[in-house]
Length: 241
Length: 241
DNA sequence: CGCCGACTTGATGCCACTCAAAAATAGTGG
DNA sequence: CCACTATTTTTGAGTGGCATCAAGTCGGCG
Image 1 (tube, rainbow over the protein chains, first blue to last red):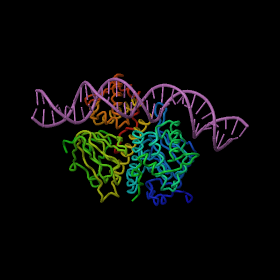
Image 2 (cartoon, rainbow over the protein chains, first blue to last red):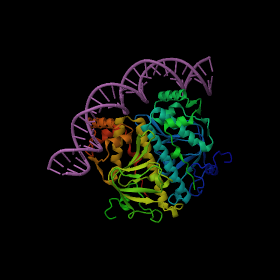
Image 3 (cartoon, helix red, strand yellow):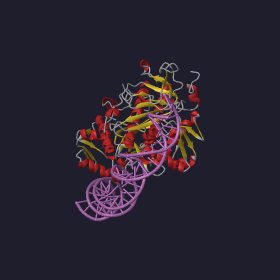
Image 4 (cartoon, rainbow over the protein chains, first blue to last red):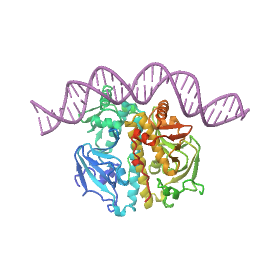
């Protein structure tokens, strides 16, 4: 575990959402239950029994819903330090699919059934906040898709990623390494891949941002934030007291 | 409290999302902290300090975000038995506005600061599930707005309301009393009021459903569910074991 | 070198928005 | 109970943003 980029302690130090400090006797705390996934791996399937989640140590994942007509909506993206399948941890079954975008290195955590009804204080304290924050992120994207046009929406999405990567040191003023394809971005934003492509061209033309060959360049953060009407308040990290 | 339509016990009996069974010493449990609001009242404002929420005893409310351009997105609607401002309860400040649609009768609940770090078992058990469920509801609407057209989206929305009202006895096979205006529905679905009106006309013409003078008529539930691709799995009520 | 996934561009069409205005309904005070 | 008003609902005409369909082109990798 010494090579882990995100030890429980480091996560707390970063002020990032974290399960650090959870007493091991109530959660099967990781280190031993380390899991690896390849790009495209289906980590969790909708309807699967719940009770387990994954703290990402490295790599990106996404949660998605697939509709009856076959189209797909990505509800959230998880990066280093995030907990994937958080709802699945507390609900009897998973409501969404969880898929690896990149190679993923994660700690699997699960509820210890024997003590499920008497979780430890810290656990009860941190988990609700993390769930509330996730809820806020999804609600904000809901507002984006419902009330922003494609350009604003795309700008907002990248800014959110940039802010979320900040505490892990994966994003700088220059930008960040972004493994998402235009197909994935389209599924996250409720657009078509073709239109995402045009929007990215426009952002480039406007000199605001550019996403090419796996790298997102933040060219003019203020203008981009102005265009998107971005306010980072909803992203304030959850700290475990 | 004897006239309350939703006593803690009744809520549990209905199998509905509920804080029933919470030991009063950890939450300032209501009965005494009853609150009333008039239609249109702003109950909670974005940015307000958190720590409090409202269990609806009667009436409807909605949570919303207002964007920089002035447009508004309703993230969720709350009905009898639901907890409004649930995220606000556990986060330091409210992220959304909470507004009364109808006259509202609610119990205000708040965290007892003195025991915040050591919540009771039942509390820690129920709250995360309720948060996870709310998250699921929002994510499902995200999928609706992102990937369903206006007709499917509207159909899905009414079916969700119908299902959520079911355990409280407020909806029947015939339909339910619905106080939402076409403006509100538009704000919930990311549409314009004019288009909502046209969609409702279409649903009426198709003989699937009708919403007039405050009453929603469910004319053909199966066809409506087929059109919307509706699956009620994400609405399974949270039971407090 | 050949293949396959990701990206790019163009032409065309439609769904939902915008703007405008009237009709119906609900709410209010005299 | 009835005028008066505000809100909500309804309809129309015109437009545009994004989808759809259809080809390419680029780049990584076996």
